[in-house]
Image 1 (tube, rainbow, N blue to C red):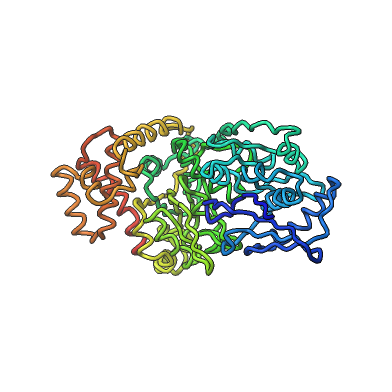
Image 2 (image 1 turned 45 degrees about the vertical axis):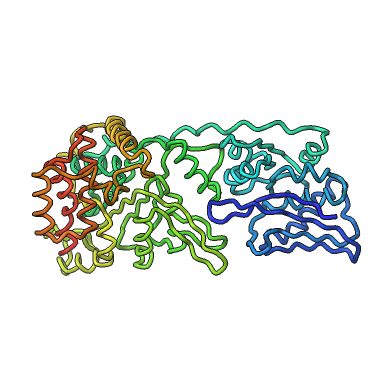
Amino acid sequence: MVTRAYTVAFEGVEARLVEVQCAVSPGLPAFAIVGLPDKAVSEAKERIRAALDAMSIALPSRRIAINLSPADLPKEGSHFDLPIALALLAAMDILPPDEVEATVSLGELSLDGRLMPVLGALPAAMAAAEADRALICPRACGAEAAWIGATEVLAAGSLLDVVRHLTGQAHLPPVDPAEALPDAPMRDLRDVKGQERAKRALEIAAAGRHHLLMVGTPGSGKSMLAARLPGLLPPLSPMEALETSTIHSVAGLLSGGIRRQRPFRAPHHTASAAAITGGGRGAHPGEMSLAHNGVLFLDELPEFPRAVLETLRQPIETGEIVVARAAAHIRYPCRFLLVAAANPCRCGYMSDAARACARAPACGEDYLGRVSGPLLDRFDMRLDVPSVAWSDLDAPAAGEDTATVAARVAAARAVQARRFDGHGIRTNSEAEGALLDAVATPDAEGRALLARVADRFGLSARGYHRVLRVARTIADLDASAEVRQPHIAEAVGYRLASARAMAS
């Protein structure tokens, strides 16, 4: 007799249903697991043996065969412990097979039978809901899994608790979904003294999800400005929160509940290509995917390896990254707002004759030349960030606070949500083709100005369309239904702001 239990295997953020088949047959005592298990899955037999021994259950002196189907799908992770144990207990007539087959389970077993938390409870719950089955998971993962509310989630503290539930001795109560965690404290925009143009650029970038490059001398406030960008962004919508939380669940970064705050990822410039794009053992999500629906901040942009920077080009356009491996192609969503900061040259003071190195201005060309032209062309906005005057630093904090600017950003995002309802996009930065022409065609004066700029500075087709998108966002912040000449002029100013620095 073959008994069955069900669990999941992860392909990117997708949880695929796996059938755990168990057969106990005559022969020399053995415990074999087949179906492309990794080392953690193969070691499950020792954890299961010890957990059953802690419950005073001895394995039969027969041949035990476990098959994980589909057999050609790689199985990774310790969460296979619980479903393998349940299928085995059903084969030993300790659990009713029908009850085991009616659930999807996952969990790591400790040697004393306790259930340890595992990764991916949220996408596992989604897979269980699609299969019309209840989910059994460790107690520490229950609130996370119950958040989707589409299936019954049963959280157990030990294998014994699961056995008692499936045999009707003591039922596990359904788990309440996790509440959204309170937002982490945000840094206030008022803390940044001076840099009014940079603050305006942050507002526009947040309102339309426009990629922003800041170039300026060391200590001018580039990193300080970027750290305040998350506070300007509206909270995640329920759908966005589900998308983002699913990625973080697979990566093991979701703990204690669902966060509605947009992610902010700031990898160091020594990060590898696999750390940025995803990969490594199990092809886990990288920084680009972890920043999905949030901000990816690359400080000291030219210091990143050229190969790492070039991996950004396609995801910026498509909003997803495909991690290619010999066994499979894993797809992760990564629709992020890219913010980068760079010094104008290696010494950082190319524009200051008193402090510049002897190689200025040639050092600027060599330094910023590490960033390829195609990648630079993908930044919607380029901003020169000058040094802050001592008079500004000595003055009391002034200007608008984060809450005031965030309210305008939220209003602009609401306009975009209504505009693009039914088009499958959310912000102006995603509009293209006929839709972009319909929503961002400027008035006659704006069109004439854009034509002169395109002819004078040789805007690429991508640059031309990015100017239109930024202008549309500026118009939204201005509560204008039409894109006018001032909006085009401001958008062009951000597009060409660092042209001198990049060319020098």
